[in-house]
Structures are given as structure tokens and as C-alpha cells.
Image 1: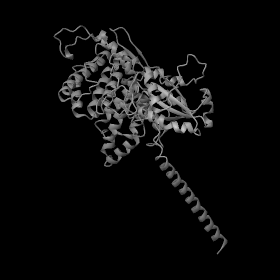
Image 2: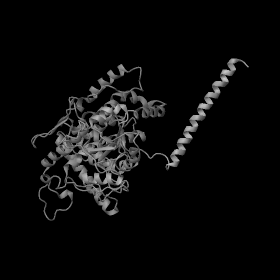
Image 3: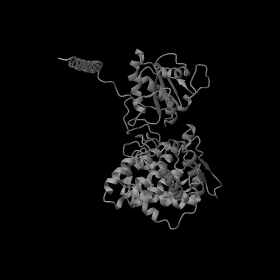
Amino acid sequence: MSLVHWILILNLWILKANSLQAGSRVVLREIGHNIVGGSDPKDYAVELNATNFDAVLKDTPATYAIVEFFAHWCPACRNYKHHYENVAKLFNGPNAVHPGIVLMTRVDCALKINSKLCDKFSVSHYPMLFWGPPTKFFAGWSSNQAKSKLRVIDDGRTAERLLNWINKQIGSSYGLEDEKFENEHLSSNISDPGQIARAVYDVEEATATAFDIILEHKMIKSETRAPLIKFLQLLVAHHPSRRCRKGSAEVLVNFDDLCPLDMWSSDKHDVDTSNMIGVLRNFHICGKDVPRGYWMFCRGSKNDTRGFSCGLWVLMHSLSVRIEDGESQTAFTSICDFIHNFFICQECRQHFYEMCSSVKGPFTKARDFALWLWSAHNEVNERLMKEEASLKTGDPKFPKIIWPPKQLCPSCHHSRGPKDKGGSQIDWKRDEVFKFLISYYGNTLVSLYKEKGLLVGDGTTVILEDSSTNAVVVPVGAALAIALASCAFGALACYWRSQQKNRKYYHQLHSLKNI
């Protein structure tokens, strides 16, 4: 046998031996897991490091954060992990029982990449836990910082003790056995106007969910193409989330390429539609992490209440207070056409269409459109509260009400007579209602974004003028008013296509950073 054959046989033997060793290691690893009680539990705590620490904490919708500094070689840290994860599963992830309240994270100080980060927090022992508002972690911590808003958790050695410590800080009574949705701890304090600030994340969720529904049910057709474009133009100009404005623009400037007017006249329109939907799914209209799988302001006490419909109402109200007078009729028709063509609940869609059709003349003032939408929402609530009362299908924690209640906006209500019954009998101060809408769905809605710095460079402002004049909401670039948006985006799309003509369908948009 030649030397070449011997070399080949030797190589094959070595490869087989290596594979057996690797297989043995896998078997041993599985045996080891079985010995200690099965495979590792799912990690709910978010692993942070020096490269993503600030970004994750800046972008979280949670009101508070916990950061655990540990070392992977530390036996006490390994033993503590399952305690920490048992608490983290209540707050983190799409199946969280109490989402959006506490973000629970971990940093491994044994990794060289995290050395400076751990020094920044004067980590003196493992594990070491810090508590505070997410944005307050950027500056770090030291023991001589008397005014720091970060606190060291000194009584969290077990899951029970850690959760008790959290409950004391936020006045809650969460338990380790809490289950999703059937939740007695949801806040329904309607007299607190600041609660709407958490809804900015629900608006993102509702926008992304609506877009997913459109794609899933193949609702883009020749007759619905124009209504979708008009609604996307409205989102680009006035959506309260910068992420969603940018994502809507990405879809819009590529729309002619992905969905040309003559697409449905082709014999291959079914194939073309499938290709278009496949590409549109890659755009992530409000970012890759949205939808998140849970609701915050719009979360019901039961699985099948509130959620998407609530988020969509908040989106429409937020758009109504951000438009200018010249855009009021266009915004009205865009929202009416969007609901009529893309809201998948048939009865709701028909009822909304009837309310839109009952409007006698065009809107010339943004104030009039905002008040019409508010009135329409109350009409829907009044109808649904009767149905839910008779069928017992409402959310007991969040029953339908005529809105805003007196506790939330005392100045919106005239005094009611003793015989007045029903929302239609309330004597509203409409100028005060409009001021409330501007404040509630304007500045207050995006206040968490401003606090977290997510509107830096954006310039979105809400200017409340005298009640006899129009309230103006002007984002940077509002010169792209919807009346001119078709021309502007047409020109932008032509430019974009000329720059990307060799990548007609599969490309990602990297410009428009300031939208």
C-alpha cells in the first residue's frame, strides 16, 4: 500500500476520533445537566456588556432597572442565578406577567470587555445589585455619591427577598406565582394624566401590529394601494415615535418598486404579491424589536381585552393633535380610509365608516378634526359599554367610560343636572377638551421618550396657543406637509431608485437618519 493511502487512512482515523471526543463531551454535558436536575432554565435577565450597556438602558420602556454585577467563575453567583431569573421572568420578555416596569439585567465582570464598566460602579463583591431609573445608570456609581438615584440592593439574597425589596420600592404586591393577564395589580388610576406617557410604546406596538396584519392577510391590493400610501405619509410626518417615522419612510420610498401600479394586471400577480410581502416583512416599520409582545398603558386585566384596539386609538389621537390646519381634511380621510380598508374587525370597521360618512363638510381646522375624533371615540365607547354590560364581556378593571372623566380633566366638564344620563348629555367645554387633548396626546405622551433622550435632534414640540386659535404641532421637517408629501416623496423615491437601480428589491435604507 502506498504512502498516500496510509496518510489518507490516518487522516480519516483522526477525524473520527475527534468526532467521537466531541460526541462524548456532548453526552457528558447532557449527563451533567440531568444530574443537577435538567438543562439550564431559560435566561430572562438581559445580558449587558460595555458595548450595549447605555443603548439598552436608554431604549427600554421600563420605569426601573436592576443591574446585577457578577463573575461567571463565582460559585455564589452561579447559585444565585436561579433566584434572580425567577424574579426576572415576572418582568422581562414577551411572556412577562408585569412587563414594562422593571428591566432586569446582568453584567459579567470576569470578562475583560467589562472591566472599566464594573470599575465605573465600584463593584466590591459578587453578586452586587443596583436599582434605579434606567437613564441614571449612564454616569456610574460610587459609595460617596450622596445624591445618586442609584441604590445598592442590600436584601435580595433569595428570589422572595428580592421581590419583596422591589415591592417596597414601588408600592406593589407582586408574587413569584403571579400568572399572566389575570392580573389584580394593574393600575387603573384614571386621575393620573402621566399614565399616558407609557402609551408611546403601545403606539409603536399598534403600528407594527397593524402593518403585520396587512401583510399577513394580503390586504394590499390595487384598490387599497392609495389609502395605504396616504396613511404612510401621515405617519412619516406626524407619528409620535421617531422610529416609526423613519420606518414608514423606508417603506414609502420603496413602495413604487415593491408595489407598482400595474402589478395586479399581470398574470403573475399572485407571485408578485408574495414576493412583495416577503420583502416588506424585512422593513420593520418601527424597528426590529417592535412589536414586543406586550402592552403597557393599553394592557387589560384579561388576555382578550384592550391591547391593539386601545393602541390604535391612541395612535389616531396622537396624529390628530400633531397636524396643522391645512392637513386636517387629508388626515381625516387618511384615517377613515385606513380603518375602512385595513381594520380587520368587520363590525367595528363598518361602524367607523358610518361615522366618517356622516361628516357633512370638509375639515378646515385641526381643532375640529381632533374634537371629531374624540367625539367619535366616545360614541364607540357608549355603544360598547351597553353591549359589554349586557353580555358581561368587558374588562372589570377597565370598563368603557365616557372620556375624559371629571377626575382627569375637571375643567372639561360643566356641572351636570341631576336628570342627565349618558355621555351624550354631558355639557362639555370643548375648548378645554381640546387643550386637554393637546397636552395628553402631545407632550405627555412623548415625555418618557424625551426623558430617555430618544427625541434628541428630533425637535418635536407641541405649542398650545389661545383656545380661540389653532394648536400647532410641528416636527422638524414639517415643511413636508401632507398636501405636498406626494410630490416630495415621489422625487425622493426617484432619487433613491436611481441610486439603487441595481438592487431593485433587496436593499436596506441607510439614509433618512433624521426623519
